[in-house]
Length: 511
Image 1: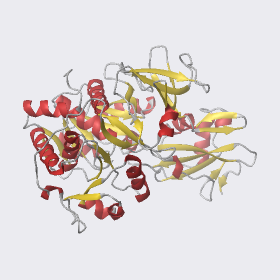
Image 2: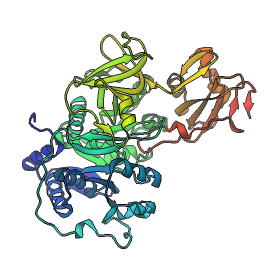
Image 3: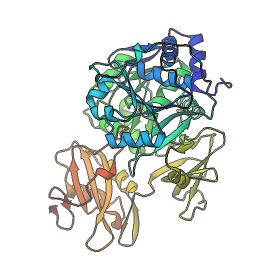
Image 4: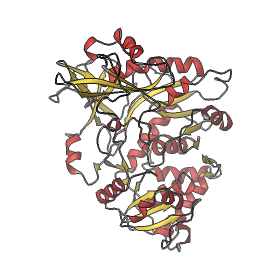
């Protein structure tokens, strides 16, 4: 509805229209109906009775309470700061310090698995889960209810502070307004053509923008149902899809490649899934996935700060690109001097909203980082990409992921894309390591299911697909790559020097 400007507006309309409709089904088979979510969020708000503007840390396992809290805090004008279940204490302390949070609402099982969180200097309220909670803290469902004075949030008011992925640097705390969440959800729902007959599967953690804004809210908007699992399981994935009647799922990282590498069966198309939404989806992998499973993987370009900036749709799909720039944004490709480049040239992706309140407001507690990326209304993403003459955006890796070798700049994304197409490779990451000849050499780490894959095979594959100066010198085969909760590779955890398990093209052996 055009007059709905916040997620809370949508919940209240849907609760009046269809209170008995199931909105979310969790992995343990607990379920949440729309009317129960509306009522439960009012009850929690009446128990908490927080002043408007209060920053609240939350850390709960996926379940009804985690969803009810999103809307309960919105009713109070409070701002949620969700934490990863496995967040290190230092990172949690940084989030608290940067946001000024004074309250922690934590699940008992979350605290049992991560007891250091109980040492945060914040009032702690517990939510009952499978484990008993630490002594001395009240339980949320035991707090007395009182008169509820609701704060009706405005579109530009802060809804949540979400941690960015931090794959190439430290994570930052992006403060998002209510309308940004709703706009993002509307765009995804429109992109994917979701409706009441859809069942959406999401396997990403609840502190992340993916499940909140591209799954939960689109389901609420359209009447679809969300099936939420705690993590991705390749062995059980299609069984879950069949059992729950899933019609679409979200993917990130290597999910598609991992599913594609599993042995083919006669049941590969025995499911109702028609679409997948996420990134990256290299053209060759997307085509192979569609041919085998009958699922069209629609790649988008999005970030925590901006939501969706470009997206493919079922009726406008250009494999290998992130699709057309969406109407809510203007996009430019900038050179190193910050000047716009013509179509077809690769540079830094910058985006400017055409509507108010659709982007993040600031990095909480970090005005310098905010000023570094926000200039004259433009957000400098730190990503490399190019726009073609038709307005399709192609992502080309992080701007800082460049190796300088023999006088040439090499984008590691280009090397990784070639390696991801190598049979037996699930995912690939390339980094620069010091060279005895000054500058750098390329080291690649490959997650592989092929026990026979080795350095010479990798080098031969690259020889006709990459320019000579971009050929990797070092090759390491691993069971998996280090990833964060959203499935993205964390390059800071990759090796920075070759070791005895690394094949060296100049020595033609593992060291």
